[in-house]
Image (cartoon, rainbow, N blue to C red; front, side, top):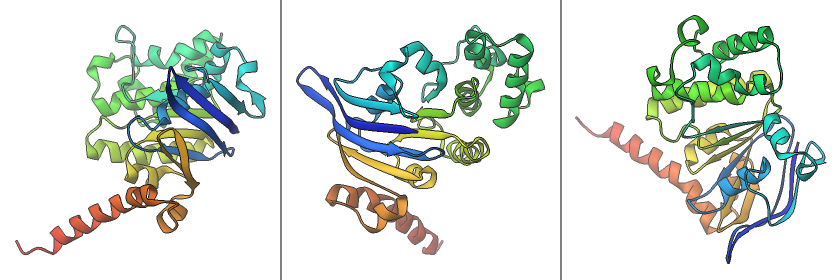
Length: 254
């Protein structure tokens, strides 16, 4: 579904992404994982041409992304990010309907799609369709953001730390909900995070990036059992240390 070939992005003298090559199979979720400044968000934005590459090639379903007008490409790819970006002067239903309306869908089809998506993200339409973004909790706003990203029935979804600003309980619920939604729809997705546990829970494949380069690509199990270098080994050790600390607390006498 996605193939990146020697993908490179330079900002002046700085190389943000350095000759990145990888593939994402149809129906797979790839997590781009790494610390701040490793190039993961830049990579994500190059896939839908919010940022143009300096060199290399991006193929979407076998077709060069540069052969598709940028606005058309973005309408075909769902995009969800941490700040959500709901339009405050539009209701929940109107926010979700934006892309289908731009694509010329008729009113009945748009309305039906809004209803379906609100049900999918577990926000009853009768309760939430006509609410304003300011009337929603952070978790509810993020659910609407996911629904909006899915509105035009994309086969590919890009997510840039979509749950990063949420409290732990809400984040866990949305992670589980997202897993269910992706399974139901058979979506291909690229998901950016710096959270190791989130990556392990959600990913089919994890691409570990460091200083703009791909360090290792593999399943969560492969990375846990066979880290390619000390950087990956340290990343994989983090959730284990946290789990051991929590387990030790449960054994302490009150």
